[in-house]
Length: 398
Image: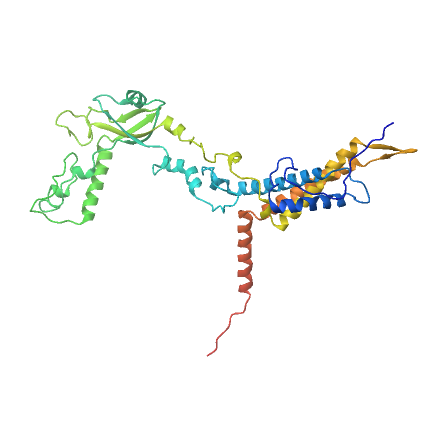
């Protein structure tokens, strides 16, 4: 019976570019220097030279490359969580690996634009002005039909309707005319337009006098005359009073008795534009977490804290590979007996170590997040203020 020959660690190695599966870091000087050190470190930690280690240099190099990549993935996943709101919409050509990301209000403003849109003070949806002619005796006006007549597809949403009585100032003689409050100049006169200014014979009255008269006219219109109002349901607008039935202020149009202004003016948004505003062309821009241009880290730039974690994770990966190898040769016959290898034990230990290392790394990154650092700075400020408050104040006695 032919004996089984199991390749074992020869005791040394010499790294050359191309000996890792992906070659992410093969040409980075520090990675080349550390590759053989990591191989020796892992072999010794696995029992060499007291015990044979059924791995070769390429296995250790693979573990080293994977550990470096996992470290970079965790690092940039943390940075992505911390900075994504500032990165969304930015061009993908930027170098985020080596950039300092300053929090930006741009996307916060973009996310809140719909509130400005609803308030009519901005936003990303255009407000349009519409106008239709009031018809004598017609009280209801279908604005959806009006939209179709204007070739607007998808419907409209009415934002404002400008349907108001004539301004009170138009129904008030100027206080600069005549002798002031002794004549029509001091009486609320509904339905009479002001004559304007420019007359040479006038008496200047206080502004409060004018305001009181305007308020009196408005109250008279509301109590004694047909009040202007409207109701809108499903874009069907009902106006009060009915045009052509006698309006507040009397006959303004020379006998037609139609309506002050003759037109119904309103503001609206196009529903299709509102829907379209939710989607922005993201070609060439960061549109989701998968296309944020984070690359694998430069091993040369990783500090000793990060490299220490990579060494430990490389050991855990090597231990896992050794466990799978020993499970294949779980029992080796020797003269008079068999040797059982500890593959399962190694795999279990490696799995536990990997999970612990990932958890430790994530906790470390979370503790250095922008939120955590600001909270710590706030706590330090509070502590300093409390400490300073305990310092006795000097009492000066002159």
